Length: 276
Ligand SMILES: Nc1ncnc2c1ncn2[C@@H]1O[C@H](COP(=O)(O)OP(=O)(O)OP(=O)(O)O)[C@@H](O)[C@H]1O
Ligand SMILES: [Mg+2]
Image (cartoon, rainbow, N blue to C red):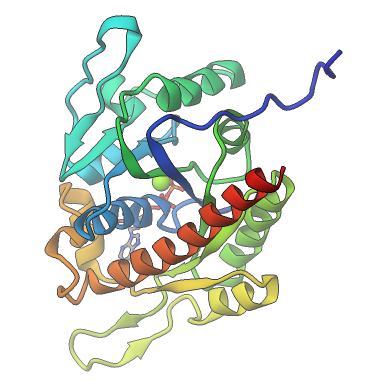
């Protein structure tokens, strides 16, 4: 008999080639900003992309994507994702909009994560990007119990406080056997618009050092730029401007590296299955 607390085996989503989670230990470091802009960049680079908002208590994808319409539910309770900026997206914010918080316990949260994965009509996707809530809690566990992840991206600012929490996220992904595709340093530095002097507000370079320490790839650094915040607040993420836009270029460079790492991880996973 199976152990009552044994992890259920994750099952791949038919038609979805790679699933990549974006997480961090700490809140407010830019996970959603990275997830949204990365998803748009991947899509502009020719990939078929879905974006799942797994931050059930604090969903920010609707605001940042500028999408709010409630999804249609079809036969067999299949949920149609919203199509926004060329991406298929789902968020609890589409179902329960406004400022009313979702008050729920773990089992219901697990159910929502499962539904968002299995009951949404994702169709054929090259990438499903999953925006995780802060911390190392229930949602990440529900996710890895439900589907095999291609890998995870850890976002951190370069400050010691953020990196301390990023290390916890790295440790968590290791514990649940999820490969870390790399670390992104967000709010790396700020360039003064007047004198063009670069100011290391959060102490630039820390995330790259942490990546080396943990022997995981460093995916790139994103500057602290007002346009990134404005794009998020207006539902028009900077990545929409394309790879030539100075504010968006870093997200495209990161998207290219994510593709490289995800291809490698996916190929390695197939090898393991074949050997078995
Ligand atoms: N590189 C950046 N430059 C300027 N503003 C940024 C940058 N990255 C993120 N922000 C802003 O910082 C705030 C927090 O970012 P975001 O919501 O993406 O973080 P988060 O890690 O997803 O937060 P939470 O833990 O609450 O989910 C947002 O207002 C966002 O627009
Ligand atoms: Mg977020």
